[in-house]
Amino acid sequence: MRRKAQDWLDHDGLLLIEGWARDGLTIDQIAHNMGINDSTLYAWKAKHKELDDALKRGKDVVDREVENALYKRAMGYKYTETTVIIDSKGQQSVKTVDKEVPPDVTAQIFWLKNRKPGDWRDKRDVEMSGVAAVQIIDDISDTDTDIEAGEDNG
Image (cartoon, rainbow, N blue to C red; front, side, top):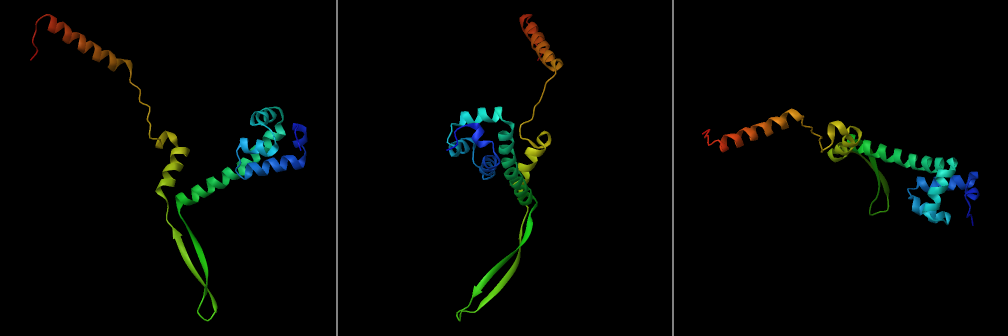
């Protein structure tokens, strides 16, 4: 069994690690498959660029596939569905139907919130300038002074 970083740095070891990452395994799961602790894998990644690169390459492939699927779902798409039909006499026929998946608003919102957060995120940062805050304090101070002096502004 491979227990040292050097044991995994050959072509076959890096290819296996890249494949696990491409299959969607987490760092913890990859470390388990390698027979090491996840903290050891993190240390090896920091020390050995080729190991880190193999993990990144594997994850990049899956990330791109998911991005493409999300984009396709957000935009909608058409496809052809093929079905084999067997009648009561055992005769086969092929039926093809063109279908359409309409654009998905939820996928569009998700895409836009992540790709253009400045325009589409729910949380907005609002800043107040010091001038407005000072004016409010001045107005309150004037009212307190008027009350103390016994003046009635009403």
